[in-house]
Amino acid sequence: MDHVSHNWTQSFILAGFTTTGTLQPLAFLGTLCIYLLSLAGNILIIVLVQLDSGLFTPMYFFISVLSFVEVWYVSTTVPTLLHTLLHGCSPISSAVCFIQLYVFHSLGMTECYLLGVMALDRYLAICFPLHYHALMSRQVQLRLAGATWVAGFSAALVPATLTATLPFCLKEVAHYFCDLAPLMRLACVDTSWHTRAHGAVIGVATGCNFVLILGLYGGILNAVLKLPSAASRAKAFSTCSSHMTVVALFYASAFTVYVGSPGSRSEGTDKLIALVYALVTPFLNPIIYSLRNKEVKEALRRKIGLDLGRD
Image 1 (cartoon, rainbow, N blue to C red):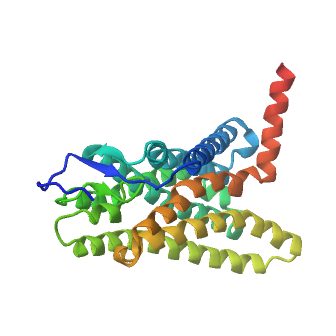
Image 2: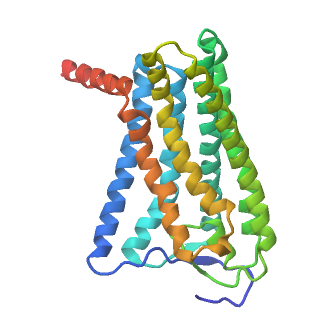
């Protein structure tokens, strides 16, 4: 690693992944394809929910908000990943590095809270169907969505600020974007207190939200099992299965990276796990949530048929 003789470095170097020969262009093209498909899938969901009246429901509103978060979430880190795959080690200014760190964690925390709101929406829809539309009015939807953004960008201030104020003696970040653990490894001082503070903030925020989701799904399970017919139970479970899949992917990777001890993992492990929640999950979410969904397929057919009819 490169050493510097002062405590405030003006730039860092993103090491990225080590790829050579024919593997380098393949890795670049593969990542680029996944990135473009992620953008296309999430933007398609946003457009469909806005244009098709059949999707004017709270569930699809929150799915469209999630897709909007994912567009920015994946765009925060993948461009630097593509640059390192194409050019190898890439310099990044300290200001851009810390902005990337803050925005990435803000969007991640926003998604965390949004998953909780989506679980609440399913709980109200299944457990209180007669009062659902009154409880989840358009105004309530907008307030809940706005609250997730405010909470996410507020919670990320603590770990981002603590990391940005560290004195750094090294420059090479063993990652393809600026993240907490790789940056703390470059500090001139002992960062054990910072690690505990990061774990406490992120762990409490994500942990409490995860417990809330489990509690809501416990209530959903109890209500579904009381439904009289197997068809009703299957329909109720089908509306929740996609959300539970995304929750499992998101929290498994997040807890592994941010709640555990950074020193207990090798440097390369963080990069591989980051690919799951920073690249693969935004790519899978449109497929898991909506593109395999009957209502979304019908909305897409209606829009395509309408456009062809106009032509």
